[in-house]
Image 1 (cartoon, rainbow, N blue to C red):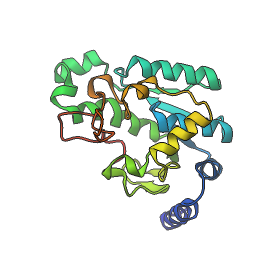
Image 2 (cartoon, rainbow, N blue to C red):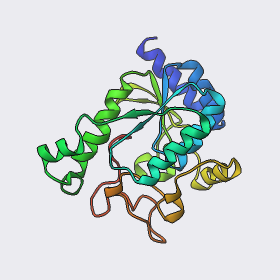
Image 3 (tube, rainbow, N blue to C red):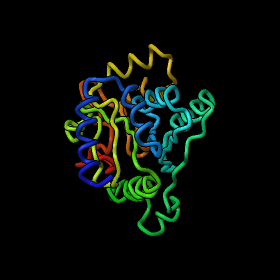
Image 4 (cartoon, rainbow, N blue to C red):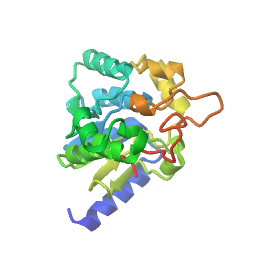
Length: 230
């Protein structure tokens, strides 16, 4: 398939699946791109996609970026999901341990240079793992942040050079939680303690009433994305 054909396929699929269910898009995605993977952060959107994918294509790879500084609750959610579905999530680690990072760039890099820390512990490992695939699936929703407002359900990811599927792009937070509760899905208990968006432990705080749902990420910095979806 040449570039023009791929672009036309993506454009047409984005149009065709805009009004269809996430399950319908997932079914088409895994059939059209067998070498596909789901990126899972164990947040609300991603546990929904894990459940859907297990029903549609249980052998499709699911990976997570293990920064070594996730909340304990996040690791426990991973373990509960693995046991429940009988799957093994692919662990993707940074090239540097926390000790090596501290030696090269100083202690607590997430405080002095959060973008650099995200690049080392998230973006570079994601770049490496995605080289093994033709397409990936994410839990992006348009109403999560202004930077995601124009996300299509199917698009070409220029940054990583592969097709990107966002099956929940048009869902609201209410849609996500209706699915979780309606299907009794395992989820991160931090969501019940005012953590609507959960990242690394050092860079995530609780969100107060009336705050933006992503206000708890990198509080105090002019930063709203780790760089995975920009």
